[in-house]
Amino acid sequence: MARERPLRILHCFRSPVGGIFRHVRDLVEEHSKAGHHVGILCDSSTGGEHEDSLFDDIRPYLSLGLTRVPIRRSVSPSDIATMWDTYKKIKSLRPDVLHGHGAKGGVLARLAGSALRVNRYRVARLYTAHGGSLHYSRSSFTGQFVLRMERLQEYFTDALVFICEYERDTYARKVGKPRTKTKLIYNGIGEREFEPIHTRSDAVHFIYVGMLRDLKGPDLFVDAFAKTERLLGRPLSALMIGDGPDRDRYREMMIERGLGKRIGMLPAMRIHEAFAMAQNLVVPSRAEAMPYIVLEGLGAGKTIIASRVGGIPEVLGKDSPALVEPGNSDDLARVMAEALSTPGWHARTMPSHEAVKAVFSSTVMARDVLQLYHELVGPAAEPAVFVTP
Image (cartoon, rainbow, N blue to C red; front, side, top):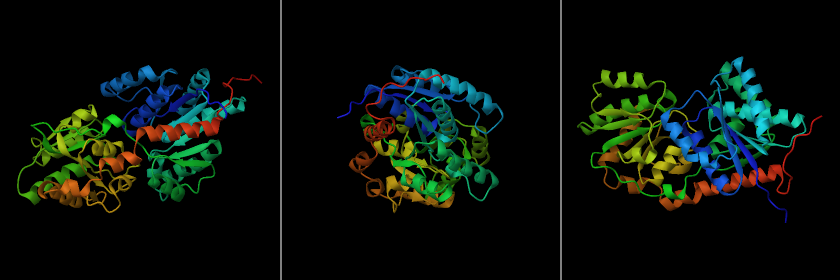
């Protein structure tokens, strides 16, 4: 049997926040422990103290180091200079695998990998969208441009990795049937995250945890919270935990509605600390791929109330009473009220730990991703070297 050698794996993505960052951290740790050399290349202008502490957690596993360069969210002329600088940094790391995550990470990994191939350097180029560009509509000019660029980049892609059935089906519908290798590999969480997190004695009724931007629905959370109070006829309490560009606007919204004292706001924190503050976790997103917050919440034994978007129904069950219509605060309030007022609601609606663990395990995720890397690189390939033309 062919001998599998340690691989040199570099993950490229833009912003070190949210689900993409979580996904990459899990892969870094699992693959490093398996004996591979792993590195990260990401944006230098986003993230804060919380993200810095998360980088510190995985730094011992980054034998290829942490490389940070300025990467803008939108397309701009500065991308040319960024690409050249990124290419030189990637070349110096001599990767066997370039795995791009998210739209900008996908561009960087695939273009840099293709440039290396022009120089007769063997490198596998992979892309995972994590939602990203797939949230765009085909009916808009911007959407047409972004989705056509996705199609074009298939020529520079050795494999597309989809993190849920929804993402795979959306790609086929919006971009087209893939013309390169594909694989469905669900997001997963670690064994230690399948431990119940008990609520504190001063717990609130509901928490929102995530980025503070409209795509994630914090405004819907505020609106539904007020409607839930009216449905139940009593005051409630809640917390919004996270950071983002619209934080001040949501604060003003709460004050205008007289909710400033009943909905608190806290910055991003360790997830186990956040989960200790409430039993009921609300995920009111307008769009998602496969959000980690849902998996983490289930692993911690929390009650999840979530929008019927992305891969969430694949986790909670397509007919789950915990799912609400996206963008509909009335429907969200109805389910929030049911969760508080109906005895045994959690037991009847939430999937079991065993069912979640069987499919959404980080060990399984990392194993399947690594298997794909080896298929693309070749298990007995010699360490990669540059050949000067």
